[in-house]
Amino acid sequence: MSYTIPKTVNPNKIFLTPKSETIRRWDPLYFIPSVVALENKIRSVTPHRLRDFVLHMAGGATPSTTQADIHYTENSDGVPFIRVQNLSTTGKLDLEDCKRITRNTHNGLLARSRLTGGELLVKITGVGRMAVSSVVPEDFEGNINQHIVAIRTTNIETSETLAAYLNLDIAERLASRRATGGTRPALDYPALLSIPVIFNERIRKLFGAAVKQYEEKCNKALALLNNIDGILLTELGIVLNPEPANMIANRIFFRSLSEVTGNRLDPAYFDARFSRLLAAIQKSDHELIPLGKACSFLSNGKTPAKEEYSDKPTLYPIIKVASYSGDTIDLEKTDFAILPQPYIVHKSDIFVLSAAHQPSYVGRFVKQLDEEPDQPTSFVGELICLRPNPSILIPYYLFALLSSSVFQSLLNREKRGQTSHIYPYDIRQIMIPRPKFEVQQRIAEGVRQIRSKAKDLRQQGEAELYEAKRSIENIILGQGDN
Image 1 (tube, rainbow, N blue to C red):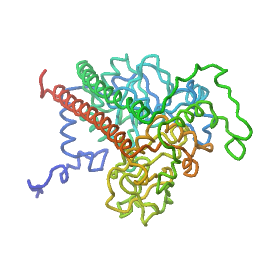
Image 2: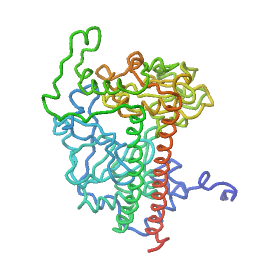
Image 3: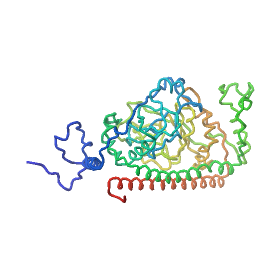
Image 4: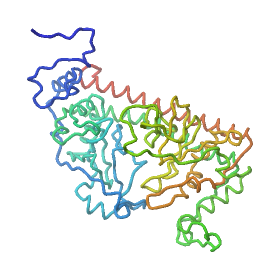
């Protein structure tokens, strides 16, 4: 006697699969009817698998951070080290947040994964979207970590066509279907190479046109954001003179013993460019006060011990670095503690990244909490929380100020230690302009409007790109205009 699932039940949540079809996999998600139907549809229109386009394939590795001085560098002659966050569903590399490795590591420890222009890079490990793909530009020198595989194809046009296809949602669903593992899904090489591929030159052209429109929107948004510093500094009467030519004479500076006695001894802290920044701020048209005086709360958070975390949501969310989203904190991206934690946060609190393996990151990621948490929410030790005293500063004004390149540089200046930390007692002494409230309000509203316009442009570009991808999917599946 056969069993039939009632029609009132969602077929993607409860379904039946014959035992004869469960030869290699037993996990239910692999057999979701809608995904099975999609794969059958794609297999009906193409004989190709990803393996048909591979001439050579290599995975990368991640050098140990315990030997950071040997493997990593911030110098401009360092080699870009591509991680998952540098891959993009536009098919292009995003190098804004890109680590660099030393040339010795590139040519030695990671020699097998040195990149060649035109190669296809595919994400094979990690949570979130699987098989995100980008193409290595011609004449680009770089390397990859172990969560990415580099595929050499016949030419760059082939790689671009494959990237455009793999970045469609229909291809991602087939890639995720093949992933295994719970907390950290992964695609092994046979699974990756088995992905059905609809190879059509038109995909590359249509996708490229859609990405171009998206990038135009993003560039307009970026241009708006780049104007903020100029507007802010003009309002505050801070005039920055052009940087002197990069000559040896301009890189050498002297400091008196009285300046360093009882203070920092590292030369970078006394670099002449900081002296120029501080001199410009001193000439501001407004009162200067220490950052600590402007805040009613300024402290690092506390990172719970591993056993103090909960795998399930509790009443005690914890903001972490991964909670950053755009300019704000996303309370949907928190961890959870088993017990109450210290330092409860509130709406308008400002968070500064206070620790990172790359010194250049410290102090340069400033976000604001724009909503009041429903539950008592704390934050980890890698963040510093600043709570402006509203009788002294408008919170959004301080957020705009600390987000500017000038004050991000001054925050970053205070870093200490091999792994780079900034501490509350150091940044409390940074002098900041305190204009009259009407000036603060004008700055805050001006910056808010610019950020809002930039956000709208990005969202518009993302929506148009999403619709373009849907149209391409319909076309290649024979359901749209040809």
